[in-house]
Length: 480
Image (cartoon, rainbow, N blue to C red; front, side, top):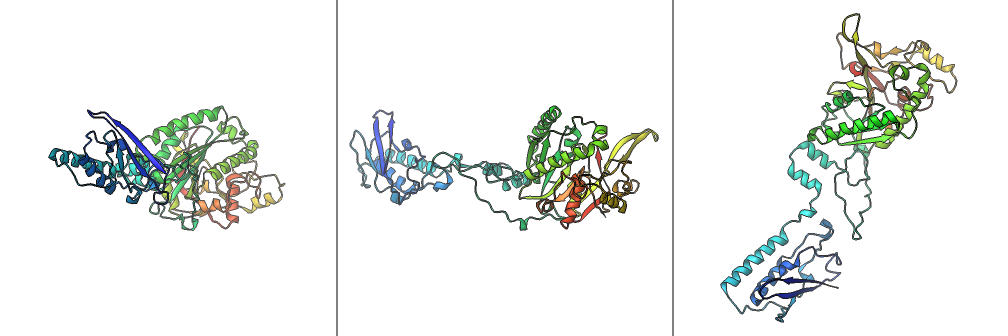
C-alpha cells in the first residue's frame, strides 16, 4: 500500500512536491491509519539539492513515533518502513539515496541545520492531545486527596458507581468506543477494619430522602473522614415534595463538588423511587402513628434495598445509613464507629428541644428501635399471625424490651461503651459491607414479626454477625 501526501508551498519558486513511501503491513503495524504529522513541514521553499540531501538522513534517522496504542491515530514506523524517499517537482529532482553534496554554501548549510533541528524537536516532542485527564491532573496538583481520587478512578463509565469515573476511553478504528473491560475484583483483599483511614477503606453513605434539610448536608460536609473515600447515595420519591427535595439537593451538591478538592466526595448517586410512598404527608406525628407503621416501614424497606443494591460496589468496605433529618453528629462519626470493628453498630439517636419546665435547651430520646429482646415480646410474637409485626415505642404494644434510648448516661457519658443488641434503628447505622453482601437486607415483609431495620438486625444475627449499640454516643435528629 502507498500513502501520498501533497503540499503546495507559496514561495518565489513554488514547488508541488509529493512524498511517497511504501507501508508494509508486516513491518508497520497499524497500516491504514493516517500519519498524524504535518508532512507539509518537510518541504522546503528552496529547491536546492543540498537541503534535501541533509534533510533525508535526518528524516530517516529520527522519524520514531509512539506505539499505536498510545494514540488512536499514530503509527509505529521503523526505518525499514521507509526504504525509499522520492521527491519530485518541476525541477525533476529524484533522490533514492543520499548523494554527495554539490554545493557547500554556508548559509544553505546553516538553514538546513536549523530546519533539521526544528524537525527533530517537532517529531520527538510529546503530543498534547494524547495526554489523559488523569495525567494532567496529577501534574497540576500535588494534593494527596486529588491523587487518591485519580488513582482510584474507574476504568469505564459502566464501572461500579462507588469508583468515580475520570479516565478517558480508547477509541477503535471505526470511531466507536471500546467495550467495557472485564475486571476481576478480589474481595478477599478488601478490608473493613478498626484502622479504616490508614487502610484507605471506602465508605458508602446511604440516605433515603423525602425532604431536604440543609443542616443534614452541612453536617455531612463537615465529616473529617477523607472525602475522597466517601461515596453518597440518595433515593427520593417521585412526588411534588420529592421534586423540591431533589432540586435543593442538587444545588447543595453542585456547590460542594465545585468547591475545595478536599471537600468533594468521590461520587454521588441519586435514585428516584418507582413506587408511591404510602403516606403523602411527611408530618412527624402522621409518620409515627401506629396505624401507619406497617405500610410506612415496608415502603421504607423497599427504598433502602433499592438504594443499597444499586450503589454497593466491589470497593465498598463500610455502609453508613444516615437519615435525611439527622442534623448533628460528631465530625469524627465514621472514624469513631469503624474503630469498634463491629459488623453492625448503632449510636444513640436523641433530639434537642426547649424544655419549658427547666426553661432551657435539653435533650430527649428519639429512636426507640434499638433494643434488647424480652421474653414478653417473644411470647407476643409466638401468638401473632403470619402478617403481623411487633412495634417498639408504643403504649398500645408493651413489649418490655430493654431500650438503648433509656440506657444513656447524659451526665457522664462514655462514648466508647458498647452493648449487644437484638434490634437496631436506622437513623444512623454503620454496617460492614460484607454483611450486606452476605444477604442481610431490610425485609419489606414480616421476618420473625419484624420489618425494616429491626428485621435487618435479626437477619444479620441469623447470618452469624453480632449487633451492637453505643448508648452514650449521640447523634441528633431534627426537631420539627
